[in-house]
Structure formats: C-alpha cells, structure tokens
Length: 159
Image (tube, rainbow, N blue to C red; front, top):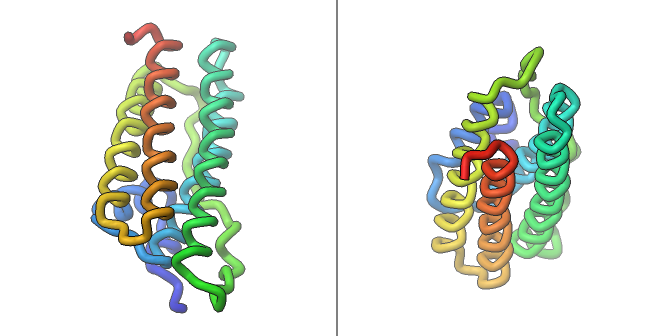
C-alpha cells in the first residue's frame, strides 16, 4: 500500500484534509489513527501549560479518550484491511503539532468547536461506511467528541 500524502502534512493540515473527505478507506483510517494519537498527546501538553486545574484535568481526560478513539480506529483498519493487512512502520509516529507558549481562552473555545466538528465528521464517515461494525465504531467515537466539547465548555463556564 502506498503512503497517503496526508502523512507528510503537519497535524492541523492533515486534520483539515481528512475532514474534507466523505468516506474513509484503509489509507485514510491510518491518517485518522495518527491524528488521534497526536491529539491525545497534544491535549496533555496543553494541560501542562494551564494554571486552571479543572480545565487541565478536562483536557487530560479528553486526551485519554482520544487515545481510545485511536484504538477503535486500529480495529476498523484491521476489519477493512483484512487478514493480509500489515501496519506501516510510520503508523505510530505522531504528527508534528505546533504548541503555543501559553493557552488562551480563545484557543480553548476553538477546541470546543473543533470537538463538535469532529463528531460531525465521524458521523458523516459512518453514514458512508458499508461495514456495519466499522460504522458503529466511528459513530461511538463521534459521540464522544461531542462529550469532549460539552465537558470542556462546562469547565470554561460556556454552558
């Protein structure tokens, strides 16, 4: 299998490119997997920059759940890839992601919107997925993205 060009992008660019797609094959699921493992790490790194312990804990919890999404994506890859599928060596490599020196409230509000958009993407991908179990896994991760948004919004006092 040829390496998808999205693997050579940085985190935000790869996320935007994947979001533009209506369905995901194995190559695109590999991109999603890397995005999720990167997101898990980025949330922890951002939490370390915060003085607000409650918001930091929400970010850490959301980050742990992003790693759970990655595990689901790996299962989906295995289902779609079949018994001959061999994971490429770069699959465990995180995307490069520029981190700020400090986290602003505007960034956190944008993260709420980003989580909601993530649910929308997951649901759209699930709708076009022919494999019922893969679609279920996508829907489950999508629903959790909305929970991440709600949790962060509540910690920020937005809802």
